[in-house]
Length: 249
View 1: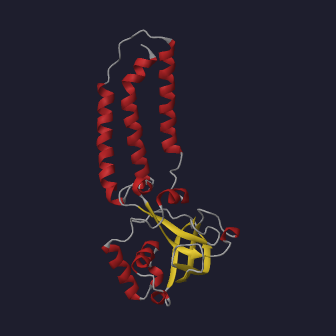
View 2: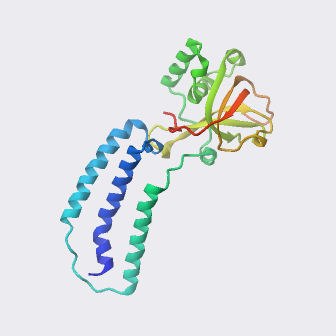
View 3: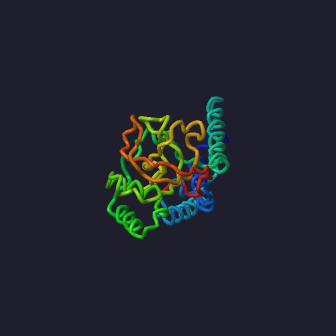
């Protein structure tokens, strides 16, 4: 029996097994949220379990392929295919999934979408009504900024936001965004949002994609180049670890 025949018979089953094992492992390790919205966790795990049933059935029904003759080049292709499958299986399990970064922000435009639904606005307004402004996250402040750019509204409100640093496209030397990604379905459709921070020569102290907690107040943006009408004037900036769940929903 030739290696090419063996690989052809088993490659579908093996690929399905890799997908099932990877999905279950991501769910068990708490990293499934790096790929999909939490509302789909149960559905995805159930589908993975069903997939495992079909994989087991495939193993029990897969018979021994008949021997066929073939050229050396076919054997070589089968060996390469098996190697690629093995690398894929090891990579999915061994390599930690990477979160989206400022490189994706550049491709998708920050605050261009995925932020201000009526529900988001109502939630942000409710938190503002409590007077506990530091409970508002990046998404809440972005939602408020989309509704009003009146500096007087923010004069007595202290913001404390956590996110990664994404340089402002118009004034990257003096303004950066405390950014997060909003996920509505999966990471493929994630939209970047962020609160602008005015800090001249910020690159001397911080790095792009570094996670920070910024505390300050929103006022008229002093930057001559940035298009953001308001910016956070920081009173305190702390470097922090990336949260276990870096996205917002």
